[in-house]
Every structure is written in structure tokens, then in C-alpha cells.
Length: 271
Image (cartoon, rainbow, N blue to C red; front, side, top):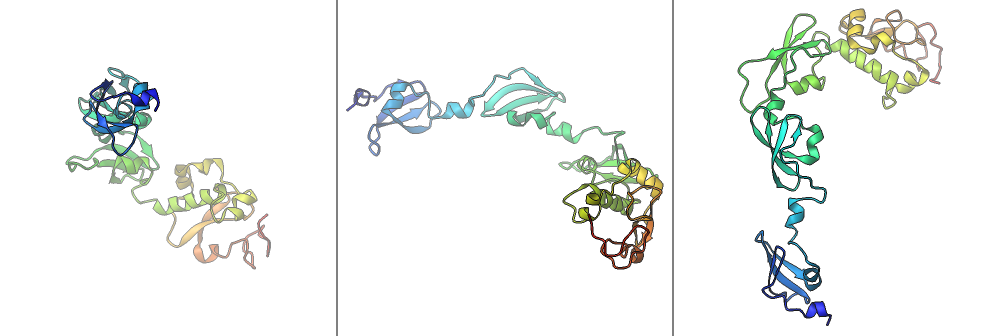
């Protein structure tokens, strides 16, 4: 029997571990109680090497742990380490919050500050943030009032606004659909129509890269009309585009046997 295995560890204290007795189910192991009140089975070799705990030290302080007490990250000041990667922080607004140091790059302040984010004056699409609506329901994100370029207003949350789910009061929804589809088939290789447009070199003019310029030039899309081009081999621009009725627009395709636009050859396939 090795010398380290012949030692009687009963009653001895090794760092945070207090040894009680041998482990009957595992030869060479000892039943220990950690200072955190957990029980564990530790080998004689580990005790001889000076094992520090049952593993609670690793959970309390990871291997890359740093003392951040008193340090600042944006609106947060670190107060106390709560174990692992969790810290108790105080926000500039006075609230205390629990923060994961592994998620600091996405954290500016406490959740209350995030909900009270001031976006007054910010613009997305045709909407401009005006102010928070009074009487917000407790526990739900506050509703903001947004003014459209047409003069109408619409309500929405900060998340909907920043995710661009809201781009107008509804007055230009049809035109935005046409604009986004045009951008997709010209620049997105995953678009099913990209081979007939972007792959052939058809692009969108620089001015129309911005939806606001597109709506100023084309106006709102009429009902049952699509975005058409006067010349099929030229790119999208104010001089080459117009609103075309769907009955005619559907025939203006690369695979149609009877071309209806100049430059569209019969039976031609995408290059």
C-alpha cells in the first residue's frame, strides 16, 4: 500500500475539508464535509496534494475571476461578488441589479433604465419618436408616440422601433414592401429571384438605397399595382421605373414567350 494511502485522515482538516471516515464504497477515498456544508468523497492522493474544497471555490470564483469591486461599467458600479460570474451592481438611477460579467458587452444599466430609454428625436423610416405615452401599464414596456412624415401618429415600443418593424403609420406599407423586395432580388443571393436580377447585373440606383428617397420619387403604390421597369435590361432608377398593373407586370418576365418591354428577348435565359 502506498505511503500516502496508509495515512489515517480521520478528523484532519485540509483547507475547507474536514475528514470524517473512510468511504466504504470506494477504497482509498474519504468522506469529507466542506465548509460550505456539502459532503464529498475525496481520494487520499487529493488530500495529500492539498485539495481546497468540494469544488465550491471554482463555482464562487472562476479561473479568470477578477475583483471588480468599486469599478464602473457604463451606468453600473460593482458592489459585491455573488458567486460565479454574478455581481451585484448599483445603477446611476439608484437601483441595484444582478449582472453577469459574461454579458457586460450588452449591458448598459439596469432593466428599469433600459425601459426608460430616451429615444426622443430618433428617426427610423418615415417615423420620428416624439415622446412616451402617459399611463403605461406596470410591468410592460412603455409605449412611445411616433410622428409620420404624412402628419399622422402611431404608438409602439422602443424594440419595435429599433427593429424597424415600424417604418410608417401605415400610409406607405405597400411601397415599402415593393422597395424591400426590389433590394432583395438585386442584392440578396438567397432571394429566389436573384438569378433573374442581381446575377444579371441589375442594380438599384444610389438614390434609392434609401427608402425615403424611393417614396418621394414613386409615391405610394396603388392597389393591384407592382413596380415595373420601362427597359428590362436596365437597373432600377426614377427614369426607368413606374407603377404597373399586375396583369401586365406578371407578363414582363424573363421566361415569358411574348416580351412586352424593349430589350426583353423572346426565350432568353438569365446569364
